[in-house]
Image 1 (cartoon, rainbow, N blue to C red):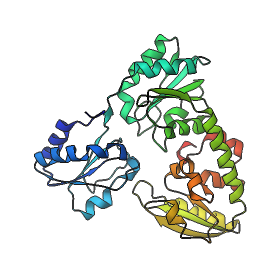
Image 2 (spheres, rainbow, N blue to C red; image 1 turned 60 degrees about the horizontal axis):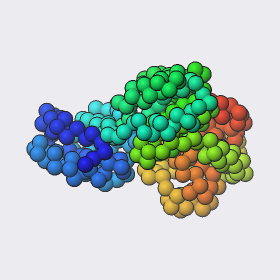
Image 3 (cartoon, helix red, strand yellow; image 1 turned 135 degrees about the horizontal axis):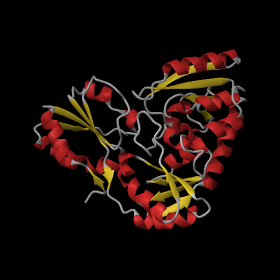
Image 4 (cartoon, rainbow, N blue to C red; image 1 turned 120 degrees about the horizontal axis):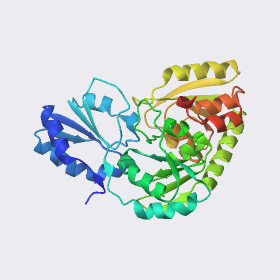
Length: 335
């Protein structure tokens, strides 16, 4: 039995309503085991399903080019909320709401929150429908709870890998955050964006823990990357080819800045940004990543050479201080 609500009945209705004949099914890695079941639902609705086997890293990674190449007349995208506005191929989003228990892991989280009375509450799209239960549990424990609602594209309390505006909006009102969901990346992003402590309540592992040691390690790593990049002469500026990660204008601006600073620059366009692909360019000393910021922060040690975010480059060039980036965050949409 799936740990997620896949909304099979709605999926069948959407395919029939849209009179789709060829459907591209896009799933993140954690939901790919459900692909065969969902493909059968699409077939029962009278359409031909095509399961996309490529990785899917977020709402920014919509398989638009693949859908056009395969002449699909509908994209079914699971696991994320809408982020990209396009009218080339009709797209239906399914959040894949998690079916997990709340009470046990919140009981484990409460002792970790004992030093703070005002708590900000955050989650990813799969767990937003559980926030009210989490909020009530915190209220019952005597906590004041705040849920941010500042983003134009996200739901209240929601965070995604490059948008922590709902956390930033309430950072001055709370003493710490509770992130309800699986994994560490989003919670790390909250800490880097707000400077506030974050407790993770993971309903899958049923464990709760603070992130302070890991965040300190990442901060040291980021400063070391910036320091190392200052010695570099040849910079590769990475341009993402995924529809939600194309920032070519920003890449050109960065190229100009680096050349004005006396550096040699090369624009490198990639769809999948992986260490083995960058190893093919041994003469490049450091990289600036204009695609998904998660690659710079989450996978930095795998690349072997400095991989800066655009804002870290501003620190390297003296346009922004280390204290400012720690205060304002690592993500461009937060200024």
